Length: 292
Image 1 (tube, rainbow, N blue to C red):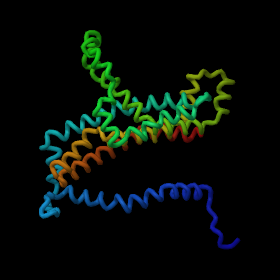
Image 2 (image 1 turned 180 degrees about the vertical axis):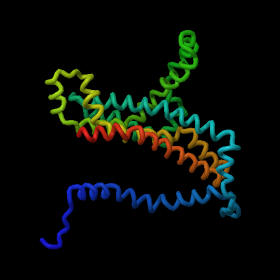
Image 3 (image 1 turned 135 degrees about the vertical axis):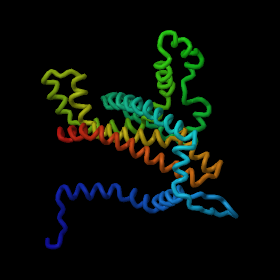
Image 4 (image 1 turned 90 degrees about the vertical axis):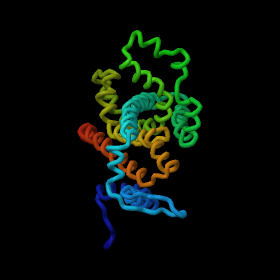
């Protein structure tokens, strides 16, 4: 038929992709773009509340200079946030990978167990997570009850023991934060053709070799998505010290301009971390794509 629009396969795939992100793009432009631009402008101003209105005075880069060279709290908090992310993200990914492999195996009650692993994503979020954390539900009481630090420091150097105990004490948060990565990795595992494992079995491959030669390379794109999600989720968690610091500046000290500058420095820092992750995954993801 004349006048009928014909798209190539690549064009159809691009159209489908744009259709999936269209709603998010519209929502971002309508609800988030203007506040973000305003916060960028506020970061160059000194804002004071007067007669129920904000009075702005342009001060240029003074807020950024204060955060990076004057404020004695900002850099330690930023460093601590980075170290916390470095510790928790690998633990979450390892736990999510192990759980996804188990949940992908044929067994009775598989759907139920998948729901159990995803349930903390719905329950342990926002104000609920803050309440649970305040009551000590996010830590393991065994470390305080038996004073394991004093017992083990005679056998393990304190430089190694302190981060190890911190990692072990955060296992509850790791399990709570692994719901979405488990779902992503599980979807990736289900896209792997069983014929690949059958061919490897005929060649005498062991389960360990199947994982490193087939499973791991094939789910590398999903592992990248899971890593990015974990990083962003860790940096924006309600338990994050930086988020609490910004909250205090805005709602307790009413330092709107300085808080905006802190937020944009934090955003640039997160953007650089994500860029490093993309760089590290680029070659491995391309290899996995070529294998498909």
